[in-house]
Image (cartoon, rainbow, N blue to C red; front, side, top):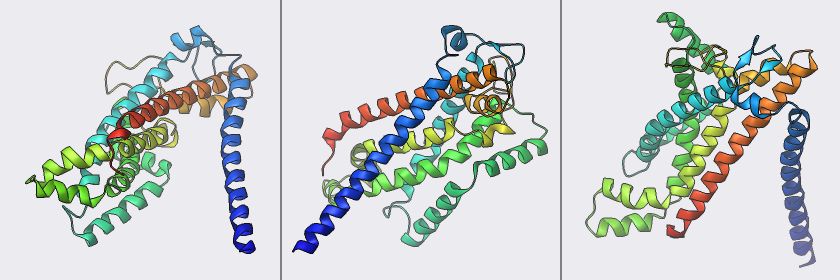
Length: 282
């Protein structure tokens, strides 16, 4: 009895330490980025485009990178959602055999673990083959390829948590598989689906390697899908590596804005999840 109590206390201590380390890591990241970036963060930096060279310049703002990142992630998230949700639904045993579904999950897991620079190189080769230049469209497509396996697998796991008894009751009322999926499964899995979207969103908006070769760079805000586009991750990547302190401070300011965007989206997703969680049958 005493050994069980001791074992329980040890695991409670380890869990408490793990939680503390998680909160400490988040607080440390926010604190360091804020301390180094707040000095360069002002209204003009958010609202103005660069002057005299973006990555190495000290004048103007980063409005082009902010809007460019939002363009990239908005397009990639919409396309990923359009593809990932049907894939996640098709992986359920109502539609596919278990063997084929398991094989598809393995493929998605491999794609999830593929380094983002590989996606960038793949997209660059395809663009060169078709004679396309770096553009907003190229960046969106590559980010979509990067986000689809993440979103699909996370959605798949969320849908698999829906109790099968609910589907059986729905079938007993005479509904079809599609009607049950739309009316019951999606409603029950909605908080998990939001989490899946946010997980893919966070990976996509913060990735620099995949868009390094495909999105390009411009001091201007893109006006079409074929125009090159700047982004916050590449701004951080190039500016943080310069020896000029003022430019380095701008890199941390860009990182702070990027962190703020991710935090806001996560908060919105959590609010939606809490709002719809009351409809979940546990």
